[in-house]
Image (cartoon, rainbow, N blue to C red):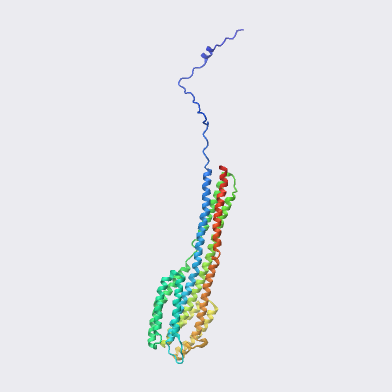
Length: 430
């Protein structure tokens, strides 16, 4: 059996392969350095902080818009009844000025056995009209310039009427003709222009901003729902009571503001629509009867009653009946129509003395009495219409402070809940 050959250290070293030339030696890692790079920091907290701020701003902006809209609604409710009231005042001014023309003409009549102080009453009517113009300028300063110019014309008209007082028939008729030209060519057209401007203002829509809050409310609600979806994706938790509360705040702001706008639209529609239209009709009825009375008085003064003048009186009374809107006014107008027809019959037969007596001393059923009763009814109905216009606005206006408080509270509480709701998820990333 052959003995094993001993292996020496030298022989083992000779048997190892020689290292390859020029190979780099592996470098050792510095002490304390990790073997892998750390993951980048999460951007979720930064995103959530931004969403938190924006969500709070959404509530505050909605609350600010709602506050501005409700404040504007109060201004609309304050101004709406003034349009009908101003129209009624101008109608009363026209009634007094036309009535003054009639009284001045009747005051110039010479009727045996009749002593009527109609001319003095005409001056009183002009003074009342001037006072109403001052009242109108105080109530609506935006009309003050036009009313000041009208006051100058009214003063000139009053001076012309006073100049005719006490004169003989021919001179009085000439002076009253000049006064009538001031009335017909200046005062009445200016009154018509102011009434037309009021009608344009009354017909202007005040609901143009009605769509703003629903649109903003839907946008705000959609944004909060999206924020809730983002939070659910990041945290795997669907329910967030803070965002739900903020969403309720958005709905409250939108609903309260829209309710205030709708209530205001109804009230303004009553003031500037229904009641203003009623006042306009009453003004028309009043002016038509005044026109008929004026034509009658001028015919008596001129001692001339033509078919054209008779037709004009009938047309005016028909127009007044069409414009009068209550049974009381129509009843008074029916009485006046009968007396006007009786007076017209006397003038058509040229029975001027009897016609003058019937016109000035008709007792309880003359044209003076029946037309005055009609004008009193019209004045009372004007007052009712303006009161109804003011009441409609006041009923809605009284609730606006509570609605404004609800919007502000919902905005502040909703913003706080939005911040708290997002903050719940931010805690998970700290």
